[in-house]
Amino acid sequence: MATMADVARSAGVSVATVSHVLNGTRPVLPQTRQAVLDAVDELGYTPNTLARSLVTSRTRSIGLAVSAISNPYFTEILQGVEATALEQGYSLLIADPHDDPEHERKVVQLLHERRVDGLIVAPSSSPRELLSYLHRHKVPTVLLDRVVDDPASGTPRFDQICAESTEPVAGLVTHLAELGHRRIALIAGRRGLSTTAERITGYRHGLAAAGLPHDERLVVHGDSESAGGAEATAALLSLAAPPTALVTANNAMTIGALRALRERGLSVPGDIALCCFDDFLWADLFSPRLTAIAQPSKDLGAQAVRVLLERLAAPDRPSRTVRLPCTLVHRTSCGCPEKGPDS
Image (cartoon, rainbow, N blue to C red):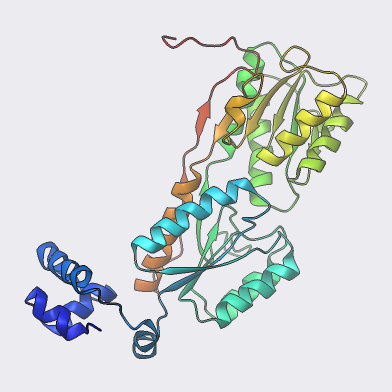
């Protein structure tokens, strides 16, 4: 079995240089780094990660706590986290908190007890216990998708990565208003989530920009789930003056809304227009094709890993919030005609 000394001899460098390349503990010239990596591949050298962790107090592992199983959006984020972690020489331990405050603290504690170097967490709507645990144990952490600022200072206590929410939703509302809609409803997500609050704010901004009044009855919470989206749609359709257009605030609620409309024999966009936040793989396969806000899911995951590694390298730097832009994917569910390839 090859040793680090064998790698050093093959690459023509010192054992210390091999260690710096493999552990990322000091900058190394690109050509020297490549020579070491080539020697590692040629000799089939496998670092002893257990021994290294005992020396460095690092396991080169990251804990990820997101609802990846129940939410396709987080599945795409997971792909970005995993690819970037692997690229940087880190392994990944994954737990699903199920968006449940009590369960999320338990799974985060389990990840921490397994000596991960840091955590990436999508906090629930009531993350007080979670944040208290992370702060008390000084766990290097990046909050993902949902921001939680310190209520006392209004600044982030932890690094945070999320997509823009407010302006994209405002854009959907103004687009529907430009198409002639005057009663535009929002199916909002779970109460307590920053994404829910931001998308409601965007909805109101869009109404204001279009000169439309805000009617509280046109904002119904769908709990960020398909069943909730269906129930919210049913409630909106039962109004004396139902909406002529819907904005759904995540992919699961979009599916629920479409199901409820189909059960009532209503067509999109013939009977009611629909725009959604969260693009997803099959959105282009619906008839009509769904006009959607696409979040940079994989980039969010990749950026979360990079920010966490920056935190590990500089533990005392101020926490920051990083927001990534979204993209409007304009299709036909809003009521616009199909665009040709040259449009």
